[in-house]
Image (cartoon, rainbow, N blue to C red; front, side, top):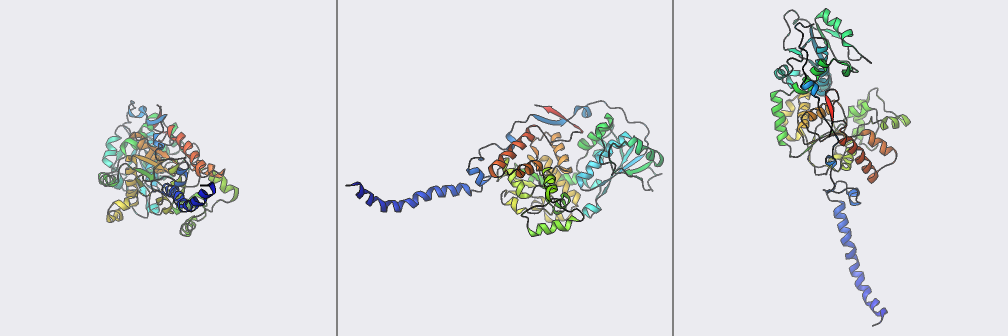
Length: 448
């Protein structure tokens, strides 16, 4: 049979079979591309990622932070027999900002040889409610654990209990601020004062015994009261294990405060941001680019999902969302990471309704210091406190996402595979060097 005859007979057969041959690889391509277990379908298929590759936590650490021995084991001078007076620390903002201020107040009281009274939580403006120190923390435990470091009393002496403290305004002080020079005279004169610690104070200039009081009070003595700890334990048990606690910040007031603008947000989000702006107008032009490249703009949920994928965190990871109400654009995150839990989704709705903003924030704090891993999208007061407490507990799977790195890489045009690889390398460097995992005031660096 001639070659032309064979060609004539095969042509109809090829026409029937060719679509099948083409269909099989196309179906396999689609199965990989749209598989829900693939971290980033497009990038993974082309070889930059795969589920078999280790995640960020598998990188070998070079540095770890631990509580310094000098404040845990050193001999400190005894407290003076006579106090110079009484100090009340007035704390503003969210729970962890107030906790930061009170921790500073412990050191200040020791510097001034003063007796602390229970701090005042100024929560009305922040939470539109009233809750106090004892609603969150175990007062008796705090007094017991700080014995010998600083003196604290539940009640004032009869001669001053009926009057308000003399207010000393330290909160807006800039530059070097000496409490002995600026505050001690008022304490000696009035015997009972209130203050909010200076924003820019230099703790490294505290006497060693004052730093020890701050460290002991903040990291060994402040624990949740029994009722809150029980509720936190209940919540912790309800979360499928293992899990990652994610502190994601993208609320209207926060975005407005950042003075950043974003492309592609929904009209609902844009309206909410605009309503929160007040006098804080967004940066424009070159100033906006400089501001973003300095890392001043919060990561969106969509950007956060991309960074987590770049760190090879599998999309089926159980994630506890440690955040308050009002997060915007969350559908962009949950479309990628689908196993997301919150306190509202796990606890009885009536329990949540009855809780204060402070006590709800305390639950997120409790879960986050005990989670298998912790990631922050914004290294704020809560993240600093959580990372420090995780270091105390030797939980080192802790990382703060770099807004600066994301902004810098995208500004030079990186995207897709190249952007993911650059983010992986920069965050791996942060993790292995222990950057952002503890506060320097009370923690020391240990080379592994």
